[in-house]
Length: 611
Image (cartoon, rainbow, N blue to C red):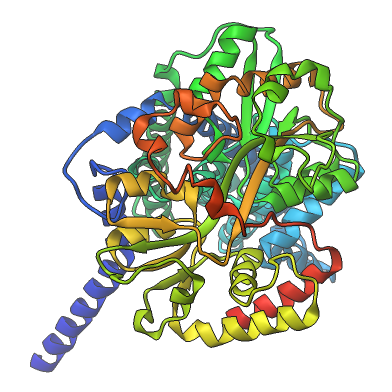
């Protein structure tokens, strides 16, 4: 018995360690949702202000509403259709049964990215505009398999003689189904429904490809906000989702084990749904209808509530904005040709591609007097749009060096510090092919837009030699590692550091003497935009100095408006990372579309990451 007890004690310890490993990160997330600091790397005291900010965030609640609508619609359709399919499958014994089972399992084994691309192509071919309906259709295609499998397994374990006995006793097919088959299948149906609901509610990848105007779901909203780093607001959102989804998983597990009765499960599920819907019911939603609509598609970093609401009040319209997390996502949407966005905000090299592919409408320059009066001359006639025909600069920044002045004592003014063995294990690079190669090319004295295979090869060799020194590749929340002191030096986007430098004064940012990337995101009107006049009004409105100043204060990124300083808060205006001296930009370059040569960069980047 002693041996058994020792073994049992060991298993208990092992189990406890496993549960700790699984749930400790979740506990930390919940705790830091009450952190007074905007940055999760440092605890500055307890507060509930982020939940208050969450309550006031209209976009969060709109995205929550979209997620609930999608998940409930998908669940309803999948449960009805999937249960019928499971019934047919359970009663069928024919040669094609194995083939049919394979078809059911196929959506579960195909990579999500393949399904996402296939759905985008399909919707484009049938000329179906991307919207909340295309999200529902796409989710049904991969969620219905869960219902067929779970309900089919439940029915497969049921005694078929019970159905036959009901028929022998005089019940018709419908009565036998309602009184015998359905109660037997009910636990499986409810479990499948919960599985489908949580899968649909949580999906990001496929949703990001097939979403359209005003159909941003909660996962899309959260992921796009991560581009500004993990803040307590994101922790608060995640904690709220956790509060709602854990009970659903618990109910599904107990139901499958038979430790919970069906009525109790239904009551529990209903209670959870009411809990999720309560904040939506409690909110006051806009009551004005038939207002002109303006549909924006942009980075979450660039959404300034003050700018949006000011425009809505002045022009008596409703601004809808959806979010993307990469230029590639924007490009894929516009190439499909089945979205109704009025304004998009691509980076300079992406604007160049969009112009080449005739996906943008020419600007009516006569409707943009504020732009031409207030735009900094440095951002006129850019290489991506030499005659200012298609895009107006919206925000700009640099990709330079960030470091901790308390941990790196020497003067930092060159990319050389990224290759110093003394800082091995404390160096971060961006997870971005062009930016990392641009850094290496600049260090070697070449252009970051090099198309010379020999120069690109030398840059690859330099990055391979550097890799043992690199802690990791991070484009989303590198500032968190700097604040925590886990990283001492990082390749960084300057705008992402604005609020980090405010909270951690030891963080510094410099533009290396060899030069770096200077990037501009431009606001442009898609060729098929339905509200071009209102789109021109927004562009012109945005370039008022006071509006541009509000944008800088909210986003932390600089504006190409030459009079923007009039409305910028003093502490931001004093940041050389955001307002650099003009002479420091002398060797900086804009990125250009490199055409087929990009494939060489991508191949070398894959080799570097795989080592």
